[in-house]
Image 1 (cartoon, rainbow, N blue to C red):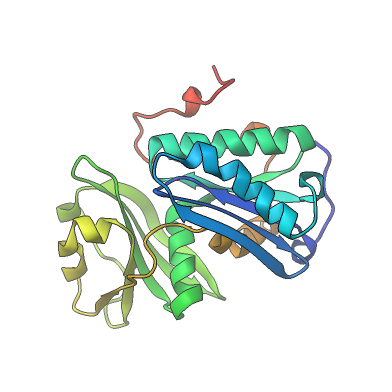
Image 2 (tube, rainbow, N blue to C red):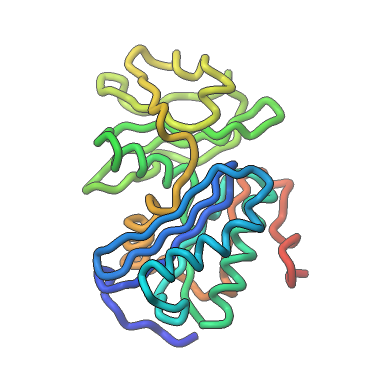
Length: 239
């Protein structure tokens, strides 16, 4: 793979996500952001590429001008994760563009900080089958950092490890399905305007990840299902 020798601040970054009910694409170039988002369950495979084309067109650049592609790596819908990773594979492969996977839960936490300035955040996506995808985050230097591990877990088994003397903000569909999660502490408030990951909230996380050496070639693209029983071998072209 041709190495792109740019500083993180000079990168042109394309991000995309289809891991939940929402579908989004965003572009960062020279400090400017261009974004598209729609909540369109079951339409991701038809909508994501036009969104990518739209943000590239708004910035008046081509895919070949992109230095890094950030993709929603999960957890989330199995089908949505496969769509996101296969679309990323297709976009990156032809232009030899490095890629970086960003957690959907971390992306949601970042959105809460960007929108509200909250620094203690819990995220829960309805995982069906009586479970949620769960993550806890603390914001440091403007970026959401995972506390512990992401998990798929029954709501009654969730253990809150964040300090409860500070205000905690909750985000995600898991709190709609299991409102009892809001009773884990007395100071939890819900971010009602943020339900799903948005590709624009991936951009700062992607820049940090690139600076930390976490980007890879497209051959090392790695979705995260959390449930061990699901393999990404279902991706086209994988054996």
